[in-house]
Length: 253
Image (cartoon, rainbow, N blue to C red; front, side, top):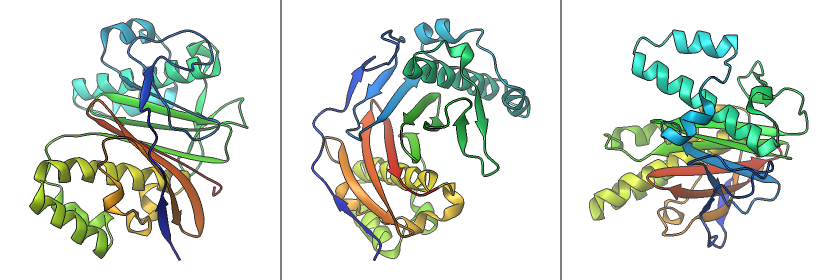
C-alpha cells in the first residue's frame, strides 16, 4: 500500500554557510539542515550582489548556453545564466573544488550528474531567481524549490492531487486562504522531489505520490517517509525565507 508516515519535525531549518566541505563561505548561501545522512542541500538567491561577484565569469557548457539562448526575454535569460553559475559555485563549495572544475551532464532521461563523481547523486532546482542544489553519497536524490507567490492554484489540484488531497486542500482554502497557498507550494515541492528521486520527474505523475496535507504547513521543518511506486523515500521539507525546499532520497533509479 502506498502512503507516507510523518516523523518528528526537525528543530533547525538552516544555518548560513554551514558545513561547506571546502571550509569557505559563499555570500548569501544557506546550508539546509535536512537531517538526511550523507546529503548536503544549499540554497541561494542567485541575484544577491555578493554571490554575483563570486559567480561572474564562470563558464557555461555548450548545452547550457544553447538553453539560455532559446529564451527570448533578456531578463529570463540572465536569471537562468545566474542560476546555472550559482549551482556550479555551490556544488564546487560542497565538493571542495574550484567552481570552474565542476562539470555537469545529464543522462538520456534528463537526470543531472557530476562528471568524475560516479558515487555522488545530485539534483538542482530553481524558482523565481532562487537556486538550490542537493548532493549526496546516495543512489537517488530529488530536490525541488518553489517561491511562494500569488497564483490561481486551485485548478491545478486535479493534475497533481488525489481526490483526498484535493478535498483537504479545498477545505484548507475555505478556512485559511493564505495558509492554503503556502501549503500548496510545499505539497508541490514534496511531490516533485520524490518524482525526481525516482528518475521520472513530473512525467511520473504527481498523483502517484501520496502526501498527507495535514503534515504540511508546520512552523518547523518536517521529515517523513513517502512510499510511491513501491519504493521508499526519506523526505525533508521546510522553508528558507519565502521559498519552500523539499529533498527526497530513495533507492530507485
